[in-house]
Length: 465
Image (tube, rainbow, N blue to C red; front, side, top):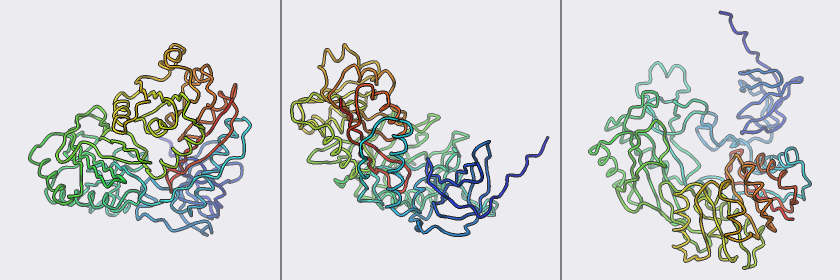
């Protein structure tokens, strides 16, 4: 067998820009090199780990000089955990690059005339801003010290998956993303599991008792913990759940799920109550939103409020409009704007989400919302518009893949006065805007930072005829 040629080490290379997926860029001759965990201005030695014709992937093995635009990471797991890759950038620099990401995508992919893009709406909270985190139990702990792999006796871990390694989990002691109660609960559950010698999940062999744990917090003070077990062991699970109850009396919803499937998704699983309710409440501008174990809710509550206010302002509602809210999810935007328009019609393909949307309308006494469950590309047609009325405004908040071409065509056929397009992926948003530009022009653009210390950015665009 032919030996592979060793990949080179490049010395004294300057990092020049930020790339997608939280990486940075260096340029060596005609080749673009993508590097994680570095920032523009760093001068580094790079070990090439993958090489193609016009680009390469590399990792920094030595820092010759640190950039002036660099700060110390907040998290003790930085550089190993796959999240929060921009911690080493001052927050003002993070916002700068997110703004540039939106501009680049809209101009290079959208290729349509744009107004001056408003400055990105930064998050007031840059730490402990998430209201939901999911942790994985695994008997395959990721070890960074090679020598430790020979001597480590306990290979159990509860934390986050190592990027690109589905079976390896980094044991997390402290995460800066969620209220510190999350750290306390996770660490106590780990301690108890070690003491009682509970088995952690083995994803390859599909065995082990403890599988995942989901923690949801709320601005109302509600606290939900969901324990997911691979199989039922009534004595062991009740003892653990009782220990959690005794240790954390502030928990208002303690639930458990038995998931013996090959994957971790819980959307098709029965949720069991151990203590309290099977829901928590979130509140926003006088509205209450009921959130269950399977409910979707924006994970940065405070910034979601800013996002919804921008959507409402872009929609220019005057109490008389019929609004279609596409990809409505659990109806948070629909219910948020309902008091400002004549009627909101929400469409979403997840049946359980539509049930949540209807219930949230009922909780808040909102009577001018109608929700439909089904695939939007099949529902949104001329018959639907004839039956429900021609929309004055369409709000659309699709997943990262953007809108199906049939949905874009249906929007163009419906000819609303205004389209408010919310996106978590400016690249696919730009593609869709290009198609909508057949009849519409971009009137406003407002980026929003929902996830500090990551490369992700939300963007809201207003299109008018």
